[in-house]
Image 1: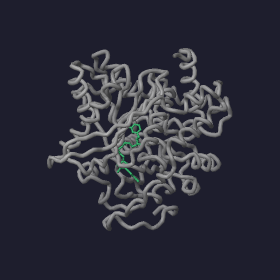
Image 2: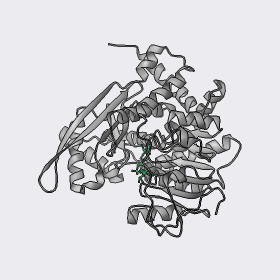
Image 3: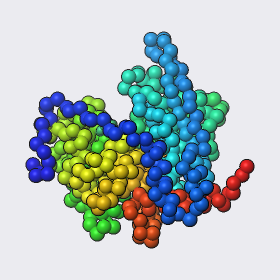
Image 4: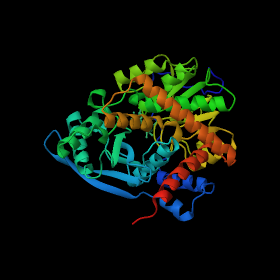
Length: 437
Ligand code: NAD
């Protein structure tokens, strides 16, 4: 066993409960702090920066839908449209009991700067329903999704606001939203939503895109610091869409994925897991628990493992300042949105840990969503090869821009550098348009 790893229980014992993430840190305040950190290095007035720290509008909805037993249930939902200076609002839809107004506001703001850092012509939005989807049948989820789409209909549109998948939503929900919108509008508008199934107008490579950009971002970072991703050990927190794909693509790049987790538990094998086999096991059983002859980890043990690369791919605030002091990875590539608190950033920068920021590392999802939207508008279908090539080009170009800002402005970390690039682009677009009305 790796000497840096505590003596964990073996897997066939009951899975350990993962301690919940630090949810008391308000993600919207984290976003605003990140913008403030970068604003000092951006050529834009305080009045413009103030505008860029707050959403343009947030819609709060109460959705009433029918349960399978005929009773009615009402749940809260939100859509935040943060900024549209560079194009239509764009961002995912999350189904989770912890969805809140401030979480949606933060996530919509991160989308603005994510789209700007990879230079795609979108603003940022985000939505969510306060619901635990595991407690509902598929027909109930369809009804609540169609209720949500009906409420969203006046707000969204191919040139207005384009939702996409996020935590606990995927192709199925996107197909329902597209169908509801098209039926109510009596039109064909596949570009109203992205992340659809291929036969409903989806793009090749979309499902893998977030994990792919995370893996590419990690590769670029190791190259930039004069090292290589090859042979590096990796721990992935959150083995859903983003995390599991990042894991097997990192393996393809020559890294060794030694630990992964989901909300049931973490698993560890110093010899390296088989990321694809773990993904298949989770698809079959619903969790990573019970996979093969491995050790079981708690959430905290996984995040502080002695690995070269840590990939947080679950939810916000996974690592706070205290935990950051215990992290032993050299590089952290944020597949999730907002997994590190601002205090964690400070501690990690002091400890010379490279953090590849979410607005860049996980931007593959929205980038291939953009490709999907372009294909929808053109009524044309790209090959998977073309999608992946274009994605790699945008990711490597964006990394060049971030590194350039980091070196030119002598910035404390890559996150601030990414925000400097992004805020300059949004501020320029706003100032070129002028303040009207
Ligand atoms: P998902 O629902 O497919 O996966 C989330 C995973 O995290 C699940 O396996 C869940 O069990 C796990 N998880 C939840 N709580 C956990 C905990 N406390 N410890 C360990 N694991 C936990 O969601 P996803 O689409 O992969 O999204 C994950 C993150 O990536 C989110 O922050 C999301 O905003 C971000 N993201 C997703 C996309 C995308 O295209 N799907 C794009 C950009 C960013």
